[in-house]
Image (tube, rainbow, N blue to C red; front, side):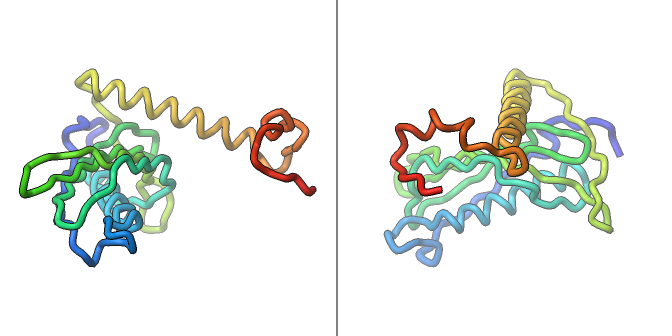
Amino acid sequence: MDNFKTVRASQVVISELMLPSHSNFNGKIHGGYILSLLDQIAFACASKHSRQYCVTASVDTVDFLAPIEIGELVTMKASVNYTGNSSMVIGIRVEAENIQTGKKKHCNSSYITMVAVDNSGKPIKIPGLILKTDDDLRRFLKSLTRKEMKSERYENFNELDFSKEKHELELKDQNIRLEL
């Protein structure tokens, strides 16, 4: 196994025509269907990078930016933005194209953490990343920032040392009635 791989070496692109069977009650493509496709391409990208079976550790961010219409061609572009010892953050850009007009729109940006595992389900070491472009570096650094923010979030709301008094000011102007 190589110790390092370029971002480009494991990029994956998929396209799929959106059918009426993929729609929700409002006639737009169901977000759950898009989430399923996101998980599939994240798996493909992570497995391609690591050459191992990978599992979804967390769906870190899913931003639905614009609705997708029936009949549009959806293209998802995935790349490894960050590598740890066994984990990878896969960045995915979703675009929808009106195949009659050719007009494209950015519909979704997502970040999914995948972990490479061995046959017994234990995390396994993966190749690192070779960062060759400013975009590669920017995406890696943004992943580090999101990772730090995630750790802080877990620290702030750890159930073993949680105290509502620490958060009284945050709650003051919220649309809630606290009945504890």
